[in-house]
Amino acid sequence: MMKTRFCFLLLCIFVSISCFAQTPPFDNSVYRHEIKSVEFYNSKKTASFPVIELGGRETVTLGFDDLSGASRTFNYTLQHCDANWNPSSLSPAEYLESFTDDRLNDYTYSSGTFQKYTHYEVKIPNRNIAPKISGNYILKVYEDGDPTKLILTRRLYVVGKRVSVSANITASNTVSARRTNQKVNFNIDYTGLAVQNPTTDIRAFLMQNARPETGIMNNKPTYIRGTQLVYNDVNINDFAGRNEFRHFDTRTLKLNSERISKIYKDTANTVVLLGDPNRDLPNYTLLYDIDGKFFILNQDGNDPRRDADYAHMYFSLAANKSQADGTAYIVGQFNDYKLDANSRLTYDDRGRWYTDLLLKQGVYDYQYVWVSNATKKPDDTALEGNYFETENEYQLLVYYRQTGARYEQLVGYNLLTTARQ
Image (cartoon, rainbow, N blue to C red; front, top):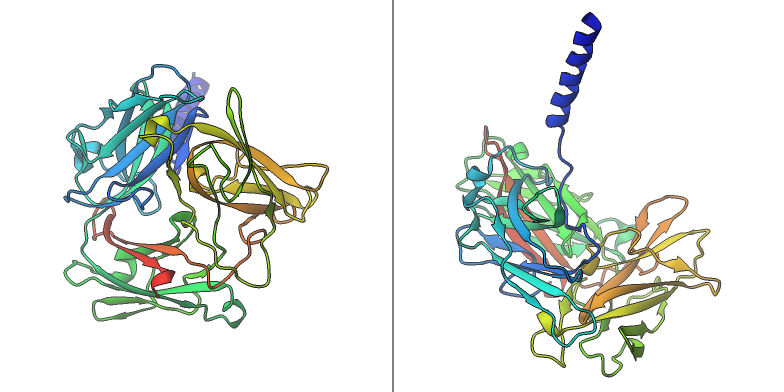
């Protein structure tokens, strides 16, 4: 009898721990292979950073294609998170207006394409879903009204501007990195905020080209000057400049563009790109890019949301490295910079790396990431090069947790571009 009670007690403890276990941080992810071409941006400008002002008229647009050909029911909701993308300890009623979820009712079927698909789209905030407070939100799309059947997640930033931010970009203070790195110095003026301890109540997250995986969280300022927090220590916010992204253009599939070698049309579209070289060279070369973004476009149609076609894109890379050294991956905003089986390249007996991806017509930026067998760490400069002159965007986000509050507010945002310096 005692043994039974003891086992029951252990089971209760295990269930309690499981219930309060921390949910892993949310990121931009697609959970179904048939979901393609996910776009999420401030509606004012395609491919822009998905940040909107709290209580304003701005919206973000979510669009994606479902290649399954089936009739499906998709719902969506928003969940408030802290600066590290862990769920806040708030109920939906505390951070959402109106309803807690809604159905995706705006969809259209593809027209005149080899690849059949259904395009879904929604703008947020809307009458049914709207954030009530500032902060980080994860947008979740799921099937059949079941939140466990996730289709995709996107990160949304809702800012209630309560601080002013000034920043500048310079060369690295480290002599050995001056030809490769870009250093960001910035000040935050929190006049008007009820800040008791500025070293713990406020923190700032800095990203290069909207890439959280290479971002830097600033938990403490270098020093405080009145109501200004100054972040300019020689050892912080020093980013590899990296290189301009590679690109290709498939706005039309009737003729070859700059980077296209051949186009085949049969029961599907096949596009063979020119081979890519290793770009880790001594000197920087100026190339136009779109900072890792992509745009869905079709010069031969009227509405690329429904008449842009898909093509099997064939990439090949002369990395001057073999599979005994490591593995090459292809990444960009089009695949959320994910290093997985879908982005991994295959090595052939000719000494080249290759892969094919099913992508919708448009203009795409991409780059190659190398993962060494020795270190097991991703390196996006080994095959691309690293230069101070590279044009980059930086997104600076300022978070504030009031003493005793149960959530973090997003109180400041600034977009920096090296081209404007």
